[in-house]
Amino acid sequence: MAGLEAIWKCARDDLTIGRGQADVFLWEHSARVARSAAMIADLPEVASRRVDLPALVAAALYHDAGWASQYQEGLIERCEILSRPTNDLQRELGAGLMEERLTDLLSRQSLDTAAASIRQLTARDNPRLEAQVLAEADNLNAIGALSFWLTVRRHSNEGKGIQAAIDTWQRRKEYSFWEARISESFRFAPVQELAQQRLKQFGEFMDALARQHRSEDVAGLAGLDPSTVEATLPSFT
Image 1 (cartoon, rainbow, N blue to C red):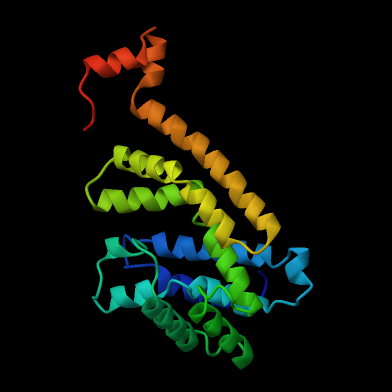
Image 2 (cartoon, rainbow, N blue to C red):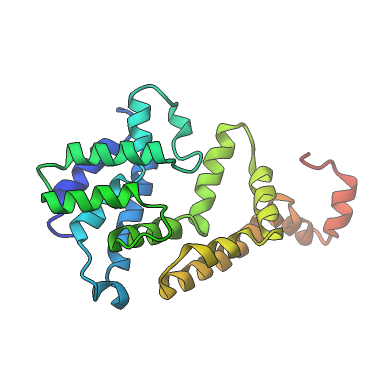
């Protein structure tokens, strides 16, 4: 990431919401996607095609920056940030903010590449390599344990608890939601394999969470049958 410090600092200023007790949720997400994208760019099947790394990192940092723009304009509340999929308008706002803020930090060619990569992020037939890598990194960050933090944030804003997160996981598991998403979301085999590993690990975590939420491990400690406890004590719903 050497040589990109100024871009990184500018993005952190733009994506950290509020001052004082600042909200770094959007910034951490964006930085994580940028780090993943830069590493994916080192895969042999990508590196051989000469990706524009400064453009890729800039696009990754600002791909969801439209949320910050809308918050600054008073159009959304802080708790709404990343609460639903980013739409075309928000991508346009993010690309515009990036073009404004990084005009002196990127070459014109790299700036144009980065802006186009943000605007065309969800186009499945996009031939632009930087947009492909960005989509790969963004999709990867939606798979596995990282997705749980977003789920918790969303549910807590709605006044819901752990049971809601468990129910969401179970529904998606029943309909093979994550398997379908992994099958459709990745172009590069190594990243798809990593997504499958993350899903497996996340499934193990969610199973443990559900057991602990129902105090099944405590029942085992006391030599009780969890189903008997469930039948004699009130549930969460």
